[in-house]
Image 1 (cartoon, helix red, strand yellow):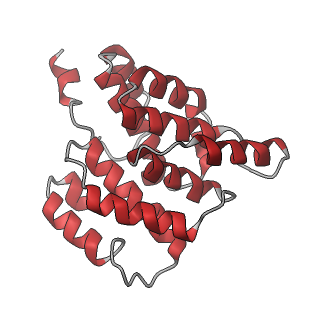
Image 2: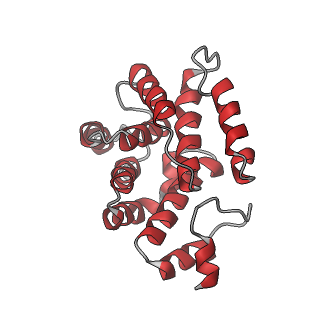
Image 3: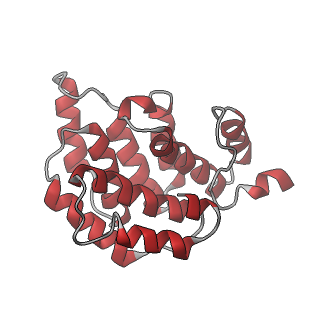
Length: 195
């Protein structure tokens, strides 16, 4: 993420390949399913082109390792891989909703809403992405993750606002940002200062 924040995507991808993208990945599989799609999604939000081959490997790994829902932290990262591949997120999302209705899914409806938002964003359907992400935004902490992980939801919503020409909403979102790192690695954000 440091390389990405400094605009050094080549170095970031080299580190990605030797760590999370490695075929002989030796750390817990859980971590790979979280960090690999998060980095690739973050790179796209920052304006770098999609790396189809890296995404394919991450997608295949996620599907082979966690074929069934049940861990909210894994499930929302899993949704990123399906969104990029244009897969229908509804079957897994509906399974999650059944778990939530039975009181067996601590994140409640946040992950299904995020999954639908990510899928809409990947399709370029920004109004639907915005509606889905806004519906769960205030409860996004329930999805689990560090600030760096949860920022993906915020940055995706921000990018959707920018893509939809909703600059005032983008400004409002940035102004409410929690204190912490000032950099927001979303391509196009600089236009908010110029407008």
